[in-house]
Length: 71
Image 1 (cartoon, rainbow, N blue to C red):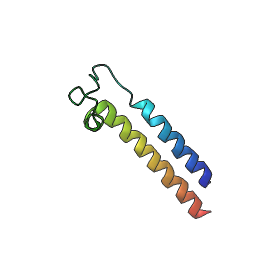
Image 2 (cartoon, one colour):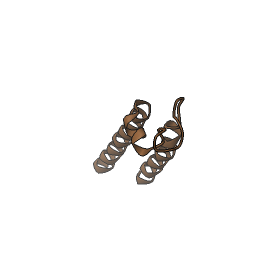
Image 3 (tube, rainbow, N blue to C red):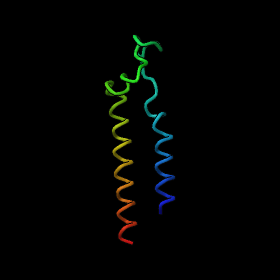
């Protein structure tokens, strides 16, 4: 069961960059145009998806660990 949880977490981590790719109006790739790390935390289109993926990952890992403890 531990192997499944590790594989699932790895797959979700690999898919996360695909879900937060550039959107229209992203701007240039300089400090003024929007391509900074802060952009990904304050821009709702990135923050919502990132938070959702993180929340789903945490919930799945907790459920898998609880099942392992009961068994």
